[in-house]
Image (cartoon, rainbow, N blue to C red; front, side):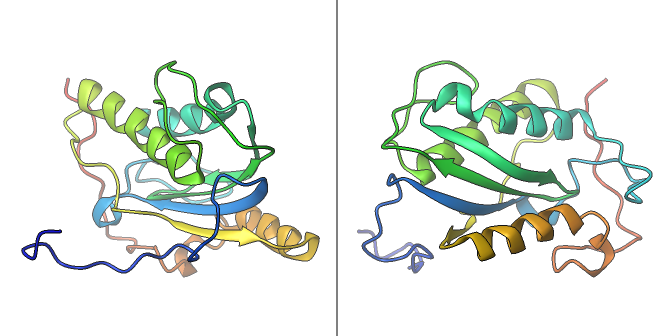
Length: 181
C-alpha cells in the first residue's frame, strides 16, 4: 500500500457478503453534485425533462438485469445529480460481457461499478463530460418489509422533495453544457 495515498475507511458492512441474496438500497451521486441528469427547468412532478445523459442513466439502470440475470430492480428514481434505487440479488450472481456493463465479481459493488462504467463510457463518447461520478456510493442492506416500504416511499417522494434534499445544490445552479454540437 502506498503511503502517498490518503486512507479511506470502507463504508461497507465488515464481513458481509455483498454477493449474497438480499435487497439493497443504493444512492449513486454525480461528481461535485453536477446536475447532469435533468434539465434546468426541473420542477417536479410537472416538468421533468431528462438530458441525454439522464436518459442514458435511466436506460442503463433498467438494463442491469440483462447483464446480471440473478439481479432484479425495484423502485428507482433519476434525480438531477443522483440516483436512488433498490437492487435485488436473488442468488449468487455472474455478469455477462454485453455492453454497456462489464463483467464483475458478482457483488453489489460489481453491479454498481459496471453501471457507472457504462454511463461514463457513453458520456465520454457523446459529450464533453469526462468525470461523471462521485467516488464510491451509498448502500443499505434492507432488513425487512417495513424498511422496504419506507425506502420505496422515500424514493417515490424524492422528486417532490427535491428542494429539501441534502443533495440539492440550489435554484441558481446551472448545469454544464452537456453535448458537443
